Image (cartoon, rainbow, N blue to C red):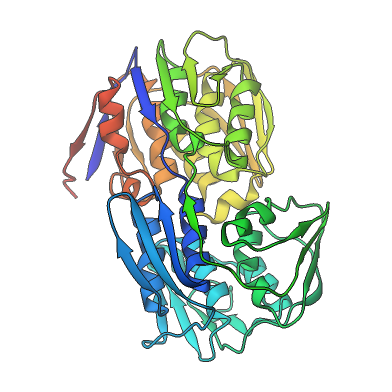
Length: 424
């Protein structure tokens, strides 16, 4: 199914920030490991998070779903799988969390996914797990799924890691409290992603220093956790407003996530100047955009949307530090570069990012969403700014992986977007 997107001159309204997908997935992983009843309130209910919930049952947990919360009776780290296999579908985050958890099993577990996930090499993630003492391997030479964990637990101890993509670190360490020895992990020149804040969900104490994280032997305890709403989850709506003659208010409550802080910093660098408070963010499209030089290493998943902003900014924008974006649900650097060039943007690829000369007069045409929700969402925003209608193929179905009401939300604030059945 294709998306047909028409240009927009004005978008107006209020949008609720969605619950964080990552925090939903991570809290489910902790609930599996804890012994007893844990509750997760306001989870993000999309395909990528439902994968974690289904896998919890596969690994022995009992799950009860309701409209407002998920209740999970965990297995006290006694991981088992009657089938000996776990299916992570299309979710790389779920696959990594489940692989780490499965290392605690007494028996062998195979972890698999769909064809897209099986094409994604994860050598540094597997290396990190093996450094922790996990008996885990890929079934293929390029270290892509399926993975096999042979069980027996993880050793822990003093560990030094070289390069590891920031998103993989908390995923590799999820089972570290159950290591046979205290984990003292040193990692060079990479942010620690606030491991202690994540593990605090399950009442585990972690010490973080500049380049070291220390996790003593302990257990996760049952918890009641409300998933934070994430401003960056509403990024496409805010950016679309900022690039048109529009005004959008995004409501949220609670503390901003690290990803939110990076996202707002990037917007300010381009001159978009969002108004922020403890309960909402407002962005109006009355700004003169300027080119920026952005290090995207803390949030490489935002590269496609930042590329669209750069197309509208005056001057030469450099997006760098995002080499991790090449191994997400698609090669997001090449994908967004190719499609924005189809729309007549001036884009050059780098190994770790993009160089974009703006402003560009984007042209509506047929583009490819690469079955990647991040590429599709960015192309929808670009299409709203274009001259003429844009048809996005290979994208509509992918939106349900992360955005529960993407198209209907855009329609509510005034965008003219519709579905079209593919003729191929």
